[in-house]
Length: 324
Image (tube, rainbow, N blue to C red; front, side):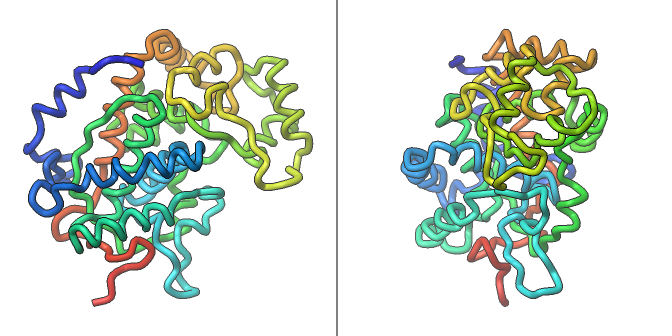
């Protein structure tokens, strides 16, 4: 599934050079001396997790996106509430069914034995997500490291920052433009829908509210109604695959949406909107090109608005801030 893209060559050239976005300084060799075996340890631990749970790669990828979308990639999504007055991001309904937080904590415990107090939970989330992409057949992405962990987590901020399930194309463009992403990169990020599933509670309004469903194949709509037979789902855990290869990172998502088989409203919309449809068609035809643009998008998203140096901390336990 695709050879080396120019991005990979660029990553090699940039090793050791600070990577700055919005004033943040990350580096590809950040842990060269403080924890040189970091990536080797993560690569060693991840396959057993993936082999025991085929849905794990999608879960790790979603975990990173939901973390980065709120306060930047700072592991705020991993914090549990320390008191009743401050509810964490996980309380937000938009973080429904977020998973694998405890697995990040498990990997953190291994790294604490290897190099205590050195590796942030935020960097572990990013590394787990990139391993998820490559294990599932996607590109091998090199990412700069050096993120610090947040000491705050707010469900109100998650409510305000995470995109709604019915997001429109112009809202999508604005959301990612605020992070310095152009249109093509934004549509590549949406391609992460190639992994995982969508819950009926998030698509029922498309099927049962009296409004046009956009570009949806009639057979696919019938299939969705069979899977999600009621306006109010019988269970919060009924779901439908995002595309026909939900455990493989490929460009099938774009092929599906062009055929009217987009699970979410935004999936259907990007296939018909004149601003985004040409990009969708390009990605559907050329998987190598999609991988290249997605790699760039992944690095950009995971490196924007991060905490570095004197800001934030390296948590000892990912679910709680450090107690001095």
